[in-house]
Length: 625
Image 1 (cartoon, rainbow, N blue to C red):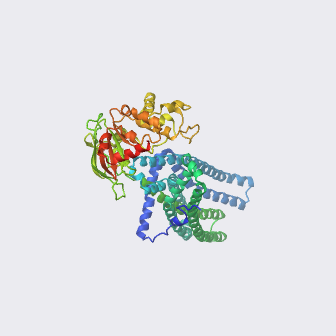
Image 2 (image 1 turned 180 degrees about the vertical axis):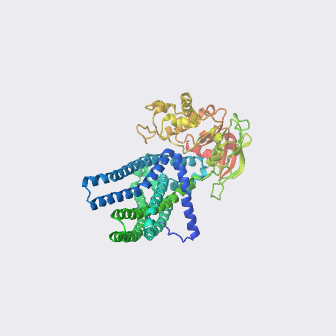
Image 3 (image 1 turned 135 degrees about the vertical axis):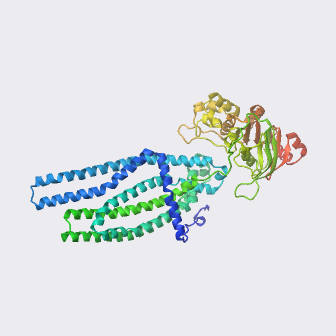
């Protein structure tokens, strides 16, 4: 039986809430309700017109209940008066018609307002969802690579994206509903307080306990979802693995489908059980307090019947007050329910706002130095050391390296030695922990970071296979030249992808990959040629190739590197490769071991030294004999 981690024994149970002081609870309430203005700013920015129309419709809806109750009382009193005075039925109907018309008009206005509210809410929801997703993506784009290599960042992203649009719209609807309830209750209060203040107090007070209980369970539900963010991400990952082309072959061949699906279902089941348990407790407490609220309502009902029979008020007044009792209690319950939902939505919005408040760790120059159009002094690593955030061990230590303009440098060494880390520092995906990297004598941190990256062409070993057209897959190397046909074709030719393009059904416009209709899948080597062409698309002074030919056949690799100097003429080229037939073409070769440069020189010089490079070269050469 296949044992999978993440099974029942490996899960984190939902921890009970620790005891909180009143100050802690008050601080959390302030935080939750403090997010309401931010939610309004999001909604206002997404669609101002819909926001204003919904506000106007809220005012209309707030005035309708009291007006409808008053119209009903007028109708009843007119009917009773006509019956008592034995007025002709037609004359009585004629006296009642204006009030009937008034009530009909109120009904039609209410129906129209409700439909308009639904329409504008639909429009606002769509725009708001898009606006929030754009904000989240733009924030992610602004953050450093260090965030994306930290698992906790993905928990924050998961919590920020979960129901953010729904919660923001819920805050708007809830706020409008609270205003509507308050205005409606205010109109009721004018009539109810004049009749009997004590009954008003009873109807109001009976709804408070349910409000307090609902607020507590809103907080617990928020904690439950936040607590399980890692599990939700794991479920999304398993769903991805089980349904995409890049993994389906192994899933089928290794028989992983059902075991991984079981892990997916088991993870869901734990959350589901905890969610149902919380919902059950919430429902039971709501039923209990609901009974008390209903008892208070029927007590008031009995009182109004009694005073009507006693002749203190008219039958129309009884109708008016009964309607007000019923609707006021409903309005109180709706008010507290909306306040509870505002609190819950505010808690969830805190996840979004916390994510959007993240700031890059790497500094940006306030007055950046212009990157020179042509390098005169090249690149220099001066006493550079680096360790990844949260790690104690050094990924690179005391790197001193100079790369002259136009020089070709190869980096070799075992996996994990620090070669790719050095490239991340060169492209300013990270800043050195110690030391500095100079470009033409100026620290990279003194340049504009985007301008530096525009001047460096890179292909990483784990390059992206864009499920887009061949033109875009190549042209993305220099996005502002994407529509330059000759430039894209030249890059394809330099990277060796021109033969592939010629064989595609629609040439440059062929959709690559299988994710979308009419997509054309490429082999690993073909994808690598496309990525290599993307690197050659960039007009930069530095070209970085991390295992650029790992998936190419020997013939095509030899062809490309025979032209290596031509392809990189006038540029600094930094090449990472495990193939010594490739790296020997470089001007110099640096051997990196345990984060340090242990040897550096030309191919011939390193062979004469008889060190690590010579040993590795002989081992690889022996394999071809």
